[in-house]
Image 1 (cartoon, one colour):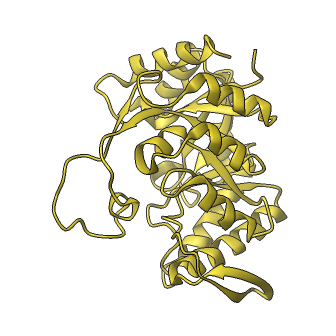
Image 2 (cartoon, one colour):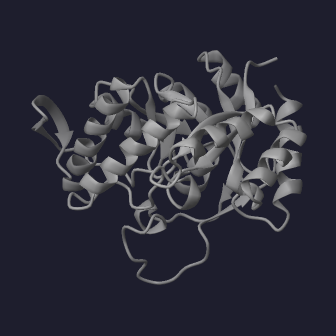
Length: 294
């Protein structure tokens, strides 16, 4: 019914790479997303013939790589750390191209919501940007990454969740590029900001290059900057959200998938399962859930 492919985040299996690839194939997935930030998959370690060997292993299981995950765990809100983070992100983009994908997903931190605007020069380009200092720092980093991604025909895709879709759209529009794009994770939206993933599809339609298939529920209101570690919680409270198997949370998958189709999206729905005692069984149910709807 819909022109989507089903992928799986490889580390969600909690198996070795060869075992996880075989399992993804046996469950009926068509692609995998691979973390490439540390260990054997990091660009500084996966070198030379190792890259071809990995790609051959993926293909021998009848799979493709939907994207790499380049989340370095720090975001881009610290001007002192950004040069090193930007350089490593570029190397992950290079690795992605060698592995025959042009998408690297990441978290960039929490885009501040600030209605006061000021005229700024971003590498010579005049922009009206919110006055929040972290916003400017994040814009400068993403501006550089967007130009690099454009130069190699790739996308550095920001994962949704820490901010509302309309805030992320404004941030992206100021870059004047789709080199920095969107990895739409519907569960993060409902769990963190309470944003509507269906409306987010239409809001971010010009930027969506990859999606995660994940579900969850928001349990209580909590500042995203606390959730993502930018602020300390003054008093420890209960969990703000819970991740659940597909179809058991607040994501309206029927209308979400319909919206993706209506905007012309034809890419991956990549299953990500970050909790649970039996990830293989959960992923199998997720594949079946998606197959019944696409």
